[in-house]
Length: 191
Image 1 (cartoon, rainbow, N blue to C red):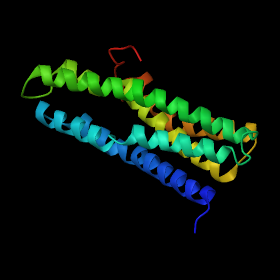
Image 2: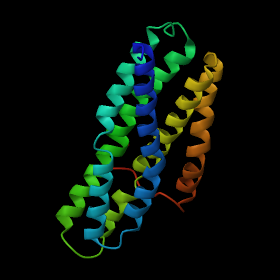
Image 3: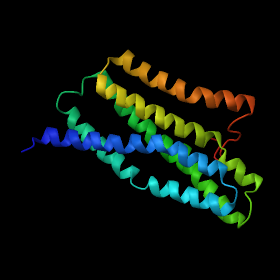
């Protein structure tokens, strides 16, 4: 028979696997969205990305609830626990605003544009810096928090893990954005 702690730990790890797994696969969806030649293809890929992320909010809440329970077993006072919790809130913000809002605006513009090739205004939305950087930061934070939870470093080590992961994942896109060779535009919301 399982003890509650073991069962909750299992649910927590399973939730983390689901969210990290989605973050790892999301760049493939994003590439298909950026490369879609027609509005119909673009709408299908955005809808696919939405369906693949459908359960992420519920899974994120399970991750939070199980993490809070596990924290009550003595982790509350550990710096890595607080950094991980902060990472959860940052990722909720990124998913809702940087990724979700821009994906929704792109889908709405693609529906409004009708059929045919992707027009420039829709192309600008699907190449949004907010969308690209938001997704990369989600992945960086997911991987950093996974590292933190496995290694349980102190405050400086935890913050360094998050900082290094974000630099590694965001630097190439920021360089491309500055030179104009990669992602090109801000979202309509100015993110």
